[in-house]
Length: 158
Ligand code: FES
Ligand code: FES
Figure 1 (cartoon, rainbow, N blue to C red):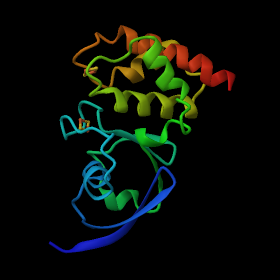
Figure 2: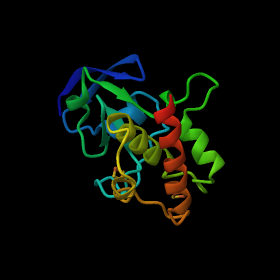
Figure 3: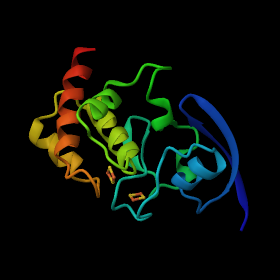
Figure 4: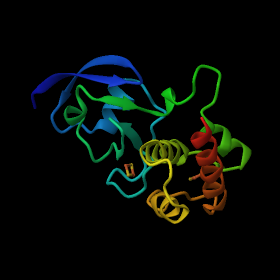
């Protein structure tokens, strides 16, 4: 199978890689670009663990081909904090115990940040609806919802 040379811009840094056309963005981010904070669970668009932000859209990176993301700005969990300063969403997850094993957490963080950046005044009902698209086997969701509500307030105040 032939490979294509593409450039993925992840968190502001260009990664020039060679991939087959069928390579998923999730695999390329982890394997070719070495950014393993993006997790892969189901590999078919159900769990949301692999969510990253492409442009200004949260996407399930297991459902996108790497070649489709070439030349676009991609944000992953590694780029969320500002140096030592946690993003308000990360801080809220910590303060409200929004994680246990942490496997689903990068996906929830990128989903919530992507949605709130695009729609800061999203209704609480819609926010809960959006979050219901990602799966967590540990927390029972209540603390995740509490954390995202708290972070939404902080992000609006920025
Ligand atoms: S790994 Fe992509 S949605 Fe589950
Ligand atoms: S914290 Fe374990 S899967 Fe969500």
